[in-house]
Image 1 (tube, helix red, strand yellow):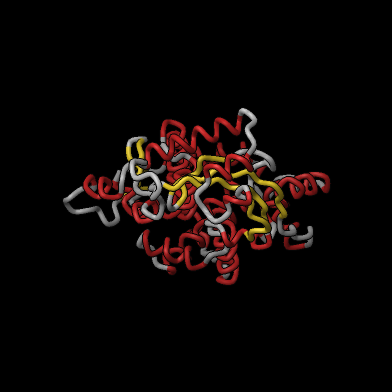
Image 2 (cartoon, rainbow, N blue to C red; image 1 turned 90 degrees about the horizontal axis):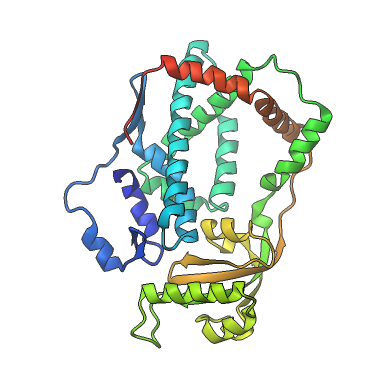
Length: 343
């Protein structure tokens, strides 16, 4: 599990490190860390002699990992399954990217720097809630420079361009196909910084000053029991007044018109995607566990289907229509490539 060492700093922001499906204290977690040298940047895979580093994989994995840790306080089989699937997909994406880059170099083509800047801004907005400070902190934790990340982004855009070129003879998207695709994805194109939510929250601290005997494990069990009571129809307001340990307890945990940027990226990704009225949690919180009930969600406006957006939507439609062709093409390239997966 050396690939996850760079994630330890991220995980420590939460209650403590979670190991083998059980919540443990920060002291216990420290005691279990390896005492020997830690691998700084190992090899995740090799493609035709070119290296894909564990730091690259780790950085791309970070936003998903943070969300999974928040969503599954006990880790468990579902967490492990989603984590392994995501990691495998990222490694495969990086392998395919390297295969395509080899062909791109033979063409002598290039990507405009301004387009790379725009793509990085989009990723910061979507993956880090628009928080550039957090984005740069994650770069630092993953031992990636901004220059290195720009190169990763350039490579991703090269893959998109090469894929479009490879299937340029595909039939053009029809107007109804473009509109249907736009309607499906316009929510992801919106200005998420304008998202606002009103919700109720029950906060259960990992350490309760009023109950010295309480442990992180017993507090998580309490949060899980409250979630069960809510699922059975118990009133959220009353349970919040009786059990929540924050400044909003007296008002039934109600927090109104909270801007998305005021929430952590992983927390926001979960609650803004939840149906209004649903019970979400327990979620792992920096100091404990939370249960959330969204009351009202207002999302930022999506961009109009202008020329720039239309071009992007058309490209998505083409990729969908040629996905089977692409898979056959990249599969043939994989067979001829020398691939060594180590992570």
